[in-house]
Image (cartoon, rainbow, N blue to C red; front, side, top):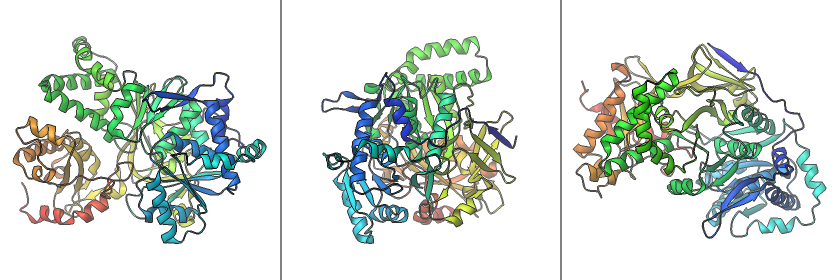
Length: 604
């Protein structure tokens, strides 16, 4: 199959916009809790739909009083928290356009987002964010930015008070004056290369995609009675889209900005579904492996993993043998139930995006009792264009198109998409828009294939395909995903463009290293730099590389690797905020390490 198109299941009037979701919930007599926030005693306190709407309107009045006009751009720079979505909707109620800014952005990056979008105001979470905003405004002479407001420490009270004289009718006029084709937000791509591009997403992109997704997911996943914890950046399109869809579907939402507290928050809030990037699932799995080994139960856990994966594969094939089913029942009591309890005890579904999950992890979690609905999308597609769903589910794929969308595979294997999810273009870049969008189809830059049933598989990225000196084309993702599944390893970057063989740069998981070292006869306080040359560590990494090499041909296999003594991170400039590798930056910064690999004698 080379093309699949799925018709919409919901027809949306042209006059609709994102604020209608809040109106829908606030007018419902049930008046469900849309959010929950932690109080000073660490208890979750609900915020009802009517309470949320009332505060959104009060803040919108403040924005109007401050001079925000329909179409004006307003920045938001904050960690993931309730107030992010609160001011996002307030901006929309005032008729404005939101411009997300990653809270880790440098002053120059902040200045680029504000200047390129023409923003006239911005919100910052705390004083350090406001300091960054002020520095950006001053250093670049951004005279258009007239207001900076703080989200915390009573900073929003200024807006609430300032808008007291604005009428409800004026807010309603602004709110209802927008339609599907009006601009809702300009999201700047986190950028693995080059300057970020401002992707123009309309109210229609969010509304049509959300309501059509709920048409196939609303009965089971994002439904009334469902609850989730948001921990991914809301400045990223994935978290942002889900935040809107949660309101549309009536789910109860909590937020946590620090994933180090994630398991504790899971246990107190008990989400029924979560959204995450693959690295989060890798961390959960690797943490479970290390915990089992530290308790002397490594072999039992290893067997439980094998059974979970085999059980999942058998379920997908349609028949589970009696003996396998019996083993699964035993391990469910001994192992799987404890993992589910650690994740809150109520978790049924997880939506994964932002990169390939890998079949092994998908089968493991499904075997444990958590269905990971892997999807695929870009900033330019308002996040998901395809996604697995409970009734159409194939591990290893990223699912079929959501209703209202289509996927086509070009002659060179590139994935092309069109439909209600596709952005209208790049802000102020007609040249780039013309280059990327053709006859309604978006060129994604990803390589993939459609199977006979219409499930999409992503096999690589056009710009990341490595062509060796011998002319062999190698997609690095398949090897990298498998190597990262090892509990000791954090990141892996496969190299070899124009070189005689494939190699890899590998970093160690600094959180897992002390425990792993103690279990393997090394000092628990060993540093990453010391570990990078330690024979025991090198042997363990070699074993992970050998296992990954079993899945590819000899020409594609990793022949040599180096352990980089420091991990790749967002702060080091090697990961995007959504935890994607900035491959070009890694290759630039570690060019000497790569040269060392290829200056050594060629491995066998």
